[in-house]
Picture 1 (cartoon, rainbow, N blue to C red):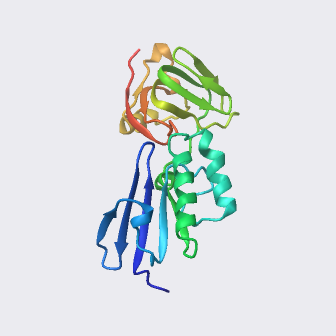
Picture 2 (picture 1 turned 90 degrees about the vertical axis):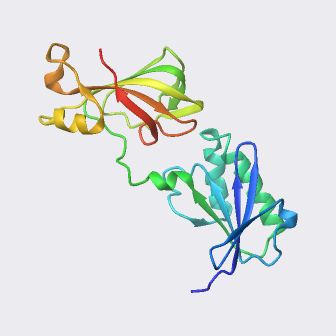
Length: 219
């Protein structure tokens, strides 16, 4: 396996571009621009926020990968679009070295997939969420059942929403306590293990897999 003695790291944010050079001794230094980057870099690593369900590990950038990142720009426009621009500039400046994309969303692939048994009702309190069923704004309610697979994404300003789930589970009370959720009282259907929680998610993240904060919501 070849040892890379010098890697240029490109971190494109929504309003800034950070560049640094990492060497084989694991030391790094910042550079001001691509023009100031070392001409003999062995590779370039690009941080990309959203890789979707398929780009879940570091990948060599080619036209197919670029198309996938571009397709996800509608989900993460503040980050994927600048990342694509930075990739194009870096590939022009350093065309003879491999360019590799590393995705923020890859760190969360080990979290449980979104799922529920029975109905799920989500009411948006602040911000927006969107999924395969549409776009939801403050006051809107998304009412679905287990037949619908969806991945609600917080909008550019993040979101705060109340989520009620109907999830049959004979041992649900103990499991819910571990998750920081409260079972509803019996007269509200607690024996059927309904879950009610207030969720706060960061911008452009999947609400159920990237929850910034989740606290019990009491009726």
